[in-house]
Structure formats: C-alpha cells, structure tokens
Length: 352
Ligand code: NAP
Image 1 (cartoon, rainbow, N blue to C red):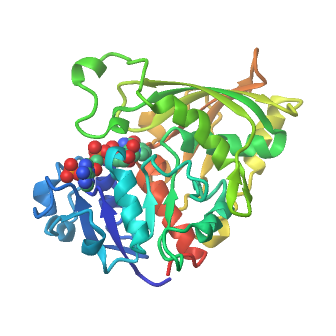
Image 2 (cartoon, rainbow, N blue to C red):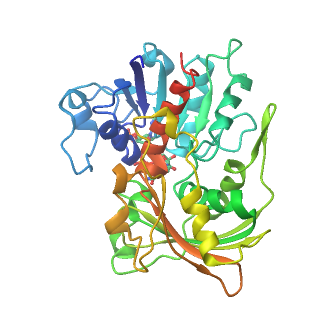
C-alpha cells in the first residue's frame, strides 16, 4: 500500500488527539497538516492542545504549527480526518469536499445525507461505493464519509449477527455513556462524580436512526434504511472510556434456544477479514460468556480499543433477547472507527 498524506481537522480536541495518537506509527497514513479553530491556529500543536492522552504527545507532531481549517492550508494532503465540533463541521467539511479534498468524518452533520455512507466496515462495507454518487465536485474527487455516533457503533455491530440470522424487528436500548464522550473539559465534576445524569442532549434521536441506515441496503444512488425501530435512553455515567449499552431485541424469526442466538455470534464471518486492514481487530464482535463481562474498565481497550464486546446474552421476558454490549467510544466509536474507514476506502482503491 502506498503512503497517504493526511490532515486532521479538529486536531486539538478529544477525538482529534486520539487521531494524532493512533496515526503516530500508522503504516499507510502520515499526518502532514493539523487544523483547529482560529484560537489555536498559528500555535505549535503542543501549545494549542491540552493533551489528555495517556501516552506522550508524538515528538514530531508536537512541533507542527496548527493551521486554520481552510482547504488552502491542506492542499498537499490526500484526504482529511475530521474531529470537528458539529457546530462548525457542516460548513468546513463541505468546503473541503468542494475543494476536492475527501473528508472522513466523526461529526453528525452529514450522517443522514442521501449519498454519504454511514460506514462500519464490518457491517456495511459495500456502502463505501456510494461516494462515487456524490456531487461535491464535477470530477468526483471530493467526497464525505461518516462513521456513526459512539453508541450506534456497538449497537449496529452487535445487532448485525442477530439481524443476519433472525431479522430485527424492534430494539430498546439504554446507553450508559462515559465522560470522555462529552469532549474536554466535558461534564462539570459536580454533575458527574458519584452520580448519573439521565439525559444527554441530542443523543437519543441519533441512536434511534443511525443503526437503521448502517443496516440498510445500498440502492443505486442512496441507502434504503432498514425498517426496524429503536427506542433509546442515553445517560451519562462516571466512567472515563467505554459506552456500555443494555439492549433488548424483538426478532422477526426468533431463535428456538439461547444457544442458537449465541451461535449467530460465533458463526458470524467478518466480511473484511481478508483485507488485513492495519486497524482491523481479530475479533471485531466478541461474545463474552461470564456474567460480569464486559465492563468498561476491563474490556474497553481490548484489541487496541477496536473490539465491540457482547455479553449477558439471554432470553427475554418481554422481548425475545436481552444483552449488553460495549465499545471504546473515542477509539472504536470515533477516531479508530474513522481510521478503519480510511483503510477500507484505500484498500478498495477509492482514495487516489
Ligand atoms: P472537542 O474536544 O470539543 O474538540 C472540538 C475540536 O473542534 C477542537 O479541535 C476545536 O479546536 C475544533 N473547533 C471548534 N470550533 C472550531 C472552528 N470554528 N473552526 C475550526 N475548528 C474548530 O470535541 P470532541 O469530543 O473531540 O468531538 C469532536 C467531534 O467528534 C464532534 O462532532 C463529536 O460529536 C464527535 N464524536 C465524539 C465522540 C466522543 O466520544 N468524544 C464520539 C464520536 C463522535 P480548538 O481547540 O482550537 O477550539
């Protein structure tokens, strides 16, 4: 694989820093431009970013000057990853796509756009081809790809084997979301220390729609959403990384036993395994058998934070099945997921 020069938009934020760390030794992608707001532009990255990663800031990156998020400053890159705040992502990402610079984004703004893939490589790799239908540029050189929000990633991944085997009808999910999901400085300490906040603004509508697009079908120039319904409750809990979801599922063709449901997970084949993508985990969807698993503290970092853990799979009393699932929200649910999207697009020859 050739080496691609990449830019990071929103490089100083919580997700942006995760991009910087995960790309430090990436075999295909090399950071050549970092962008943030005018508050940070012109400063060295080490001065502009309040570094919250548990490893040292990469030495080369620390000395790079932060640019404003304008396409002219990124002219040498092959594409950009975006960790921009959603209040500014819409206009900035569009300006990059229109300038012929592809955008692989974490922000919510384009997730529901008819021609923008909402990509989880292990679930809907075929949706990547939709970028050829986008019209940001006449020659197709500029496009946008998004990943789902940090709850919809483990939700769609954990539903996929069940959907393939039994077809999903209805889903009820309660997401117990870690503090890092709110960025930095995030939730005030007096709200979250030894407490649970039963509301996260704007979160539930995203959780209720995104998985139906991820598990939808590619139709010529758009995605037909799947017709199952999701009811979501999103709460903030005092963990740091790893969103834990309690899920109940009604199926169209219920399994005859809980073993048959477990088999749906153990029999599931990862459709991108043969591509050997650098960030692809060996077990993207892993079923844990112990009742106390998975837990954010024990399992969020498994397989480099790229695994979706499933546990407590059991027969339901109101709906067919119940289970819990968890994924690292700023890696699998954000920067790591976006990097895997970039790897899939590169492996498919869609990045030039
Ligand atoms: P954050 O820590 O608040 O970082 C926001 C970034 O956007 C910073 O780099 C900031 O630069 C930049 N920015 C703000 N205003 C700007 C402007 N006018 N022009 C250019 N850049 C500007 O937020 P985050 O938690 O990293 O989240 C980033 C995005 O990822 C959001 O859209 C979020 O919804 C999404 N996301 C987050 C998670 C998660 O778990 N945290 C998961 C999935 C998706 P300055 O430092 O210069 O202000």
